Length: 128
Image (cartoon, rainbow, N blue to C red; front, side, top):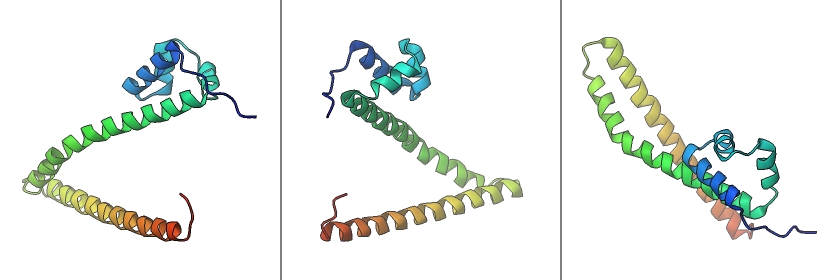
């Protein structure tokens, strides 16, 4: 028998706001004044669970946005480090640039392979 989804309570909404601001279940419980046990009980509510997943995704998007804003500056620092007087600093900067460029290439190749696999599965009628 399927449980009927309950609407979110004001306390649950407050919890979700705290979670979005902190990114931590423990911190959200503390700020909202609920125990982890209550939090686990709330997870049985499909509406709460969906709102929590949405909040997690929103938090990750926010964090990734902040990281993306910093990438250009980080690259500039590494480029500058390639011209540093210290051989160790130049070597370390070169290693980081090479390591991350290889990781990026691997990731892009994996994403392309996954995309092709998903397309093949969809052609075969497999829903993802």
